[in-house]
Length: 406
Image (cartoon, rainbow, N blue to C red):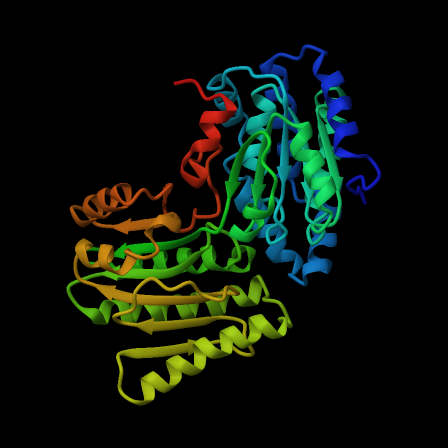
């Protein structure tokens, strides 16, 4: 299994990559190389992907089918046509970009890495100690496709508390991109241009009036899948679903439908057999609060899987609530887009994506609301984890700095 280098220093890597940049490689060739590497990874039987999936599944205790399905969703938008289109949209800019990756999601950051390479930059990736497998394996695939392009990519690893190494990386690159929680962002030195992708969450809005029961069922299945992939741990995973309808019963019925679909998915994409104490306690807390509120007559219903496999809480009047993850969803009822805005007021600046579906004209009003709130990405149910290459991640600042043509 390929591993990130723990011996090479960031300064040495930056110097080596600077030398690699002296070899002129045009954008179409870089696009072809990246397209071929990603096409290899879209094949579940490819050697580097297969080994990475096995290593990741064993380390984080996800089932291999879940890791496979999550990677399929992640890489689905990376077609050769889309990569070529992205390359044509970027102004060539030399230099070295550094990436500090988060450990919660294997493959997170691949969009920005691909765009940086397409723009003509070399890239240093500092992998998380808790997720050291994806990017070394991807770099090895790229090396087999085009060794010259692969020379522009270095994958390193050091402990998070090694602040000297992190400072050295920041001092050695022209642009630094970091992923993680807000405390991680605050601790990173910033002598160069810096973009931090901090804590963000996602949700869904389904307008059910005027659509057939079968279509509602499809939306429930799609939302369940969005919450299952990556065990609901990424910024594109839905935490709460607002069901817009004339009757609150529609939201209650939708919660039941989602619970049925989560149960079905648990058979094909099994959940983790064990959780750490903190995560398990958080899910149990959600369940017990919902259970007692239901007992005393509040408009709350609890649907729960065996062990802690999945949880759906129907809470009619809830504001947006961040869930503990691990397939834990809250479903609420709203009558109008105005009520959605009221429920989102505190969390709106941190919403990365909303999945939106339903019938017009309500759908138009919901889209307008999402745009007014500054939601970075509006998605379809079932496609939340498949962000396009030019996704305005974190508001789009990265796209501007990397050199997108206006």
